[in-house]
Image (cartoon, rainbow, N blue to C red; front, side, top):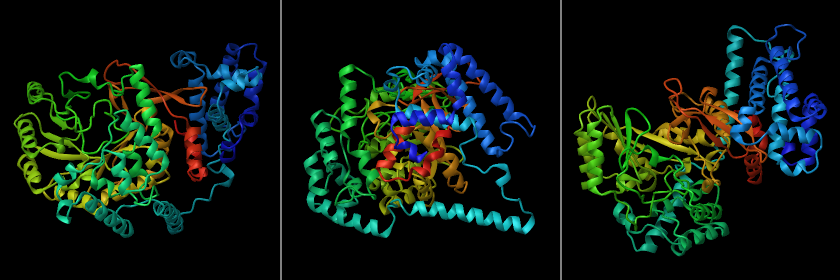
Length: 604
């Protein structure tokens, strides 16, 4: 498969038919695509029957049971893709394209991409049991008994652990002594540039006064790459929000982008492609509200997608703006009008009081901890007086971007309303990469935990934390530093965030092949896709989503089902993913060994 990534389209098509000579013959000899559909469906049905036939002379008799499972999944996906209903839903026909390729129709190669051909090479190899990840039956190890079995199993587990540790050593951990010392040096430069003192560094108000919003200041403190300069210039010229706190800037590598700050920089420096797509959306009047929050807001300031919890958004800005933010359509920089009026917040609170089904309120925004303590005390006090609310979540990135905001006065407010057995106050934060953990963030978390509050993490699975075992290291670092992994979100399917988007197959692969090797208390997060209007759909099972089409450009189309599927009739949601082929090519350009990811084609 690795070699195939670098082949041209014509040679890939040759490999395609080498992987499925019988299907090529069926397509080539059919009078039209509809006849081919029925012939291929008959072929798939025969394969399915052979797969479950216990006789020793069947096509799949010698396959390992795990390989048989993969065959079953591939047959299911191909059958889905060739269904006329799904062609109608996706407004394309992969079968018609394959029919044209088999018959060598004029111009057909121009209609498909390498990614399209690669998807079907993988599927056709899969239905023949030629994936080759697992041993055939006659090559399986003899299963031992007793102590010998225990020794052999222990050696296998050691091999897994050693493999994980080799990968962990490749990635930056912000608590490594060398990285901590490098960041201290940059911190001194930042303080000197703004005329600050060591005492100022631990005052969140000083950081708020010196948020970096221009390229000149940023360039004076760290070396920027040419692509970063172009992105920043485009963002600032076109009023695309850009903000970095001095603390978060101290996590940069002063001498230029490197492995220690690759993920850090990407989160806050807008790329050219991001800016181009934002501007395109503006010109075309495209609504960037991917989650359709306006359609799930019963009253201004409130979002509701679940029976017992609501989101309350009193503030629409953050001390630092993340490029890939879910709410980039409404989050503004702090120079603009970002406060929801107190009157409207009061009306939203009254709405929550009037609905006794609400037991939990997530206060988020924007980042609500940007607000002053008096306002925070007011809003928490108002919610705490609602008898039927038993939990208040605070959605904040402050422990990552401005940890000094977690001071004695704020903790005192939390402590007044956090009462076990009556009401919980919990912090839900967002560490995205182990490079973001640092002594100051650890101290903020320690102080929150010391007063009895829980701290949870919601990560977004993006290109910049998607390498082999990279997110596993994040979970491990978080847990040992007092943060419980809670959710891992698939990146929002927004065109402007293409730089961050990763195929769904990769997050599924990470969950099943990498995260599964971690201890249970470390892998407590759930991988989810946030379905617009409907909410989170698990990425661990077919019952919540299925592949229905491969587009000519190699992208998969998924059909998602709501979490309410077994409770009521609800609409489905069609999602067009990013191409697995393009993702692997990008990893290859960045020096990754593609052999590490080859099973990605078989996660659906």
